[in-house]
Image (cartoon, rainbow, N blue to C red; front, side, top):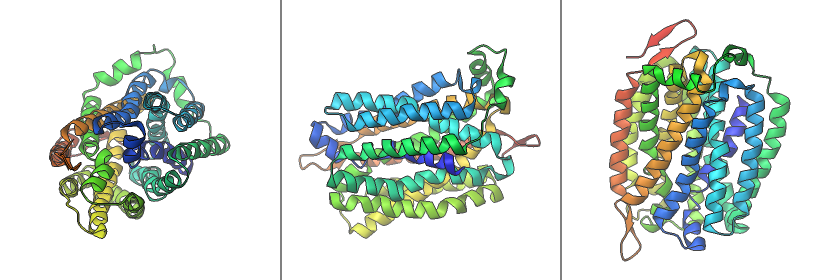
Length: 395
């Protein structure tokens, strides 16, 4: 679990560091907010396309060997991001990073579901997904400090170097995970995809992922832009937003993991998804208040948003037919990536700038995100969960 968390940390940081660097990219490459949204979406949309293709082969190879291969290619793509000298070059490097990095999430979640019993899956997901919190509390602030002191390119070089170290560590610490390969022999490349899509429960799980991920990514990519433009936050203070938000989510992740296993995955998700609506809308309406107030609101948003992902991903992984889990998780990763990319693009078109440079229309992204969060609760009740002893319907 710790090895997977380390791998998750680097590719999540590679994605997240783009958002607080938005103001720098706008100035360096002379791009608009919508173009920056496209830069963010390039990673997620390419990850979605890659996940779709991965669904045809994910269950046909040893999971360890596949993970190491994709991770090495991801490190090379991240290094290329740091070498970008133009908007077009950076866009191409982000697409490449998404192609390899997007599959890593699906593969990691598949491994967790393969080796951890249903009854303890919430806590296991909390360990792996704590990488999101760690990337926020340590990775993003440190990356911003490096970017401000040395240059934004150095941030990507550092992520690539850390990925190389973790890849070597994973090669020695992770066991071979190929027991599923024998079960998949005799099937054509696309037969597994067809079998996954033929299952109504899988289709509901995809809809669930779409609504869950879209709710947040209408707002998340533009937090830094809004805080600096409308909230009066200085560039030097931006790391504190992610530092305190990450610390809070790091502490709360284990609590939400235990709550998920104790109270129930569907019940815990419904509670947190409903609670998300308040801070999601509030952040998009914040005026130029004192920095502690702005940090307080953003911290609550980070805690609830990352917290709901623990029961959410436990629901998704448990909805998969165990015999088709790798293919299902790859398709689900594609759906999630597509949802994040499209949501970021929509959010970029909902906001605009007035004559003074302030962002307008951000509140619309917050309202749409809140509506999608409530819809995800409704969809979650449609899922039938596979347990270690049978099938359990969450209702």
